[in-house]
Amino acid sequence: MRPVSKEAITLIHQSPLLTIPTDQESGSRRLIIQGSRPLSGQVRASGSKNSGLALVAASLLAASGRVKLTNLSSCSDIDAMLAILTALGAQVDRGQEGQVSIDTRTLSDVETPYAVASRIRGSIYFLGALLARTGQARVAYPGGCQIGSRPVDYHIRGLEALGAHVVLDHGWMLATAPHGLVGTRIYVDRASVGTTANLMMAATLAEGTTILDNAAMEPEIVDLATFLTSMGARVRGAGTPTVRIEGVTELTGACHEVIPDRIEAGSYLLAGVVTRGRVTVTRTIPAHLHAVLGKLRDMGADIQASEPDYAVTAEMDRPIRPVDLESAPYPGFPTDLQPQMSIALALAPGTSVVRETIWDSRFAYTQDLARMGARIRVEADTAIVSGVDALGGAPVIARDLRGGMALVLAGLAADGVTEVAGTAHIERGYTGLVSKLSGLGALIRYA
Ligand code: EPU
Image: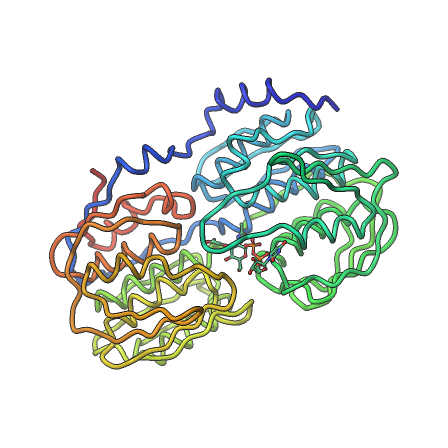
């Protein structure tokens, strides 16, 4: 392996896959929304962003054969992961409609390009994957949305338990396992999604058996396990709190369809609810939205979910009822839908209490919502939402991905025009946002 940084960074700047808007661009591009129109119709869910991030990194584990991913989202965070993979020496070919072919036999570097990797959270998955495949990794300290402190200590402790030596060095995470990784039993703090995924990847090629206790149970973890298994890994128990991985000596390429994005699906259902319309999300898995659909029903929405058709419809033709909400690891209510849900509650007559238990700073969107007339008081991890009759359009700024989408929903429901700046945050996780919302009858455009 050739730990060269300059070439990788040059390559990353040249890569056609790199489409993440800069912060300046995000400041200049705005979404203009003419609100107060009921949305109705069908919209198709894209592949899960958070699943795709792990699957792209996991592709690195294939020492032979090609990986073919279908239904891979083309949001900017996924593009960034593919660009990093390219910089590491992999051959990446994007086909039609979410198809990507990846060949990592040509892997030639173990250093993630700093400029890109430090901007997204998913890049931390290269730590586990590179360590497993090559015994070394030089990975930029990850970034991601500013929704809390976002440390990496669980990842590092877990990899150290597998026998790696990891140091933080001026913004880099340097990891080595000269004698290979060795399986062991690891307790995953706070059922961390990222730590569970990273350790699963690392453990696939470790010597012996790894047991992850208190593992995350998110559908994205199950999706990763399915992919790893089709590559030849031995993974059992994904989707339960105990995941058992028996190390193998080599993994090979495989074909895999990424699961639908449950957070994107929930966001569009909420677009129907807040505009008092009727939205059907197709190509989604209703079971993944169980907690969300329960809350929508409590709020008075008429929900029809059909497992065989992979479709969910939300219709709201009455005043929204206030409900209390607490985010929690899966199968609890997802933190990634807490901001969008709060828009519906901001329009529900009465008081709702929203508690955020995963991230310590995920209420930034409420400042902007206040400009639109929402009445939300934030006290530590809790938002007390006093519903108002209507919101009024205003200029607002997306400060993170899900908070940004919440502002879009607020704009769709509000009287008048809303201008949302900071749209690069939203593009990190939502593919084709304007065309999907326009297809539902929204008046929304970029300016
Ligand atoms: N944590 C630590 N140390 C660590 C790792 C996590 O203290 O080393 C803490 C976090 O600060 C947080 C909690 O543990 O308080 C859980 O974090 P987790 O590791 O589960 O989150 P993550 O893997 O960094 C993923 C998604 C997030 C989603 C969370 C929870 C990706 C790239 N991100 O983050 O998605 O909110 O799981 O479900 O998969 C989003 O899509 O908008 C998003 C933020």
